[in-house]
Length: 148
Ligand code: FES
Image 1 (cartoon, rainbow, N blue to C red):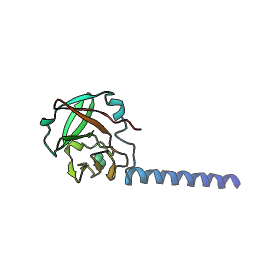
Image 2 (tube, rainbow, N blue to C red):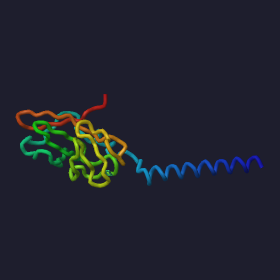
Image 3 (spheres, protein in one colour):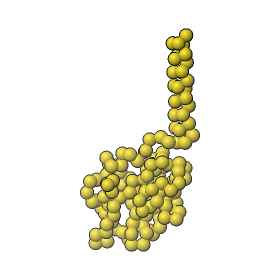
Image 4 (cartoon, rainbow, N blue to C red):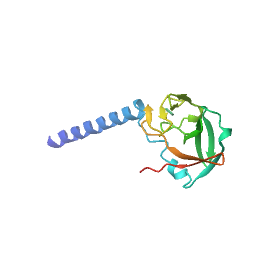
């Protein structure tokens, strides 16, 4: 009898875990961070993306660095550069829209602050990787901002 009760308790615990996992995965979309591989693909040193004048103001533009896609948003003389594939489910942020200093993903509407990649609005839960930028002789260069 005691063993049977333990078996039922174990079954209840497994069922509750499965229900919670399903809810988080399918309803809350709290899956893995799709931008987690960016540090592995990003160059460790500065790399050029082209002339700053080639980037239209306030318009997301896609560029690639090796296998890594990034999105560039020119803001006056500054440029913001983030990984292009959304941390949520890999939506193309370069096809997104600008909203109050943030970039909104075209697939599910997550918004990431251009300045630091912070999630301002979900469903994304992980921040979007951002790149340091500098301009040398009118050319934009980036390198990955390493966590401190
Ligand atoms: S892919 Fe879902 S919010 Fe970007």
